Length: 486
Image (cartoon, rainbow, N blue to C red; front, side, top):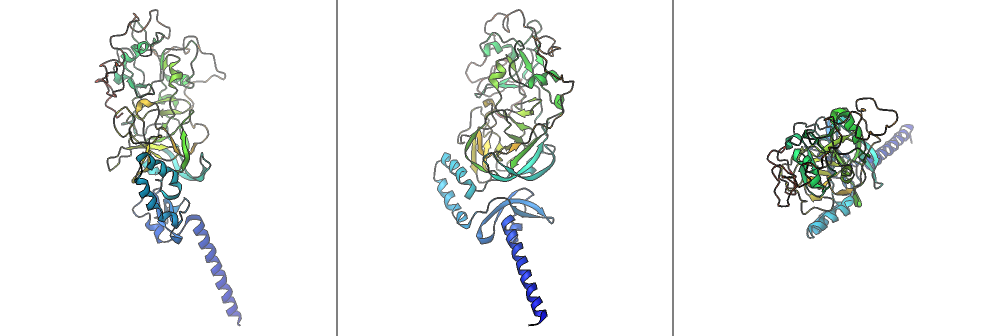
């Protein structure tokens, strides 16, 4: 046996070991790098979901990534064994034979194993909605699942101001039309136009003579706005002796928007059971860079005989969370669907897409599950926005949630902030509200007589009064801010 032969054998052994280690590592981490991985991303863009059959006919799922100037499917989900893949068609056919509600529930339950979720697609966000780069990071979801998330910083202001404008909020007087004010909701389905007549008739609407939000002599509405409005909006709890005002916190007073960094799973992970939306945490992000907020504390706000009015998009702002939506009222409808499905408006914190309401009515759509979701072959599982008057974007989480990082990245509101919180003056902010008066007028309710005003609240007939309070019909008055979808 020559030395040359021995060296040759050793080299062959080392080469075989190296190839084995390389193949094993490649297989364990990102799946097969065969031709199928490249073909899975043909005609797809970066971050779109993809899948292909890898070793042993297992189903490899991931997202398209740019590798050497070409798109390749990079696995970021567990491999589905051949047995589960072959049973997918049978399970889907079985589910179709059941009721619509059962289909949705079954699909959520088995989603981790046999039903593909639609991955989050960062390219759908409007230009200017995201600040900086979007990164893929390791993360742990609310249910304990370790996976990957997109880490992105939301601008906190509408990137589509032409179609999703901020404001207006409070009307200047009881003679103002609906185009000078925003909207108010009751949490049960009713949307009110906040025009002058609405302000004038608050005592009748809420059956409480304590409501008096305008000067009875001049008709000017008591408005707290600017930096003072933002400071009051900091805390929705009532302040003794400080009431009967319409509150505004303009975007310009909070640096043009408050940036928030969010972690959203790259592909949704179904939760063991639906999770209730509670507390004051934001629930997702709109495609135009605005946050989706939780239900507004309506009862707390009304207890101080005040209104934190929403604009026509269903949003308002405070220095903690910035500008955020409490209702989906026709804005951020950027994700137009080719098949006529209602447009996509954003992503929930669990990574499932949120689409606009299925129809234009003010009642909840039929055929959806308890969270407001449904499944189809194009969009997978997704939510539909609730009716604007319901005080929620969607009903609950069907998946494990991502999270918002730390505190808000924001500029402080303009003006000096005292080192210690001062007690509120008896009748409002130091310099008074916008119209210069927060004192209660000498004479009773809005019309001075205590009788029901001529243009009172809705009479339940289904028609909005020409100038009065709204009702459940959802039809906007003739002088309103336009026929936004409900």
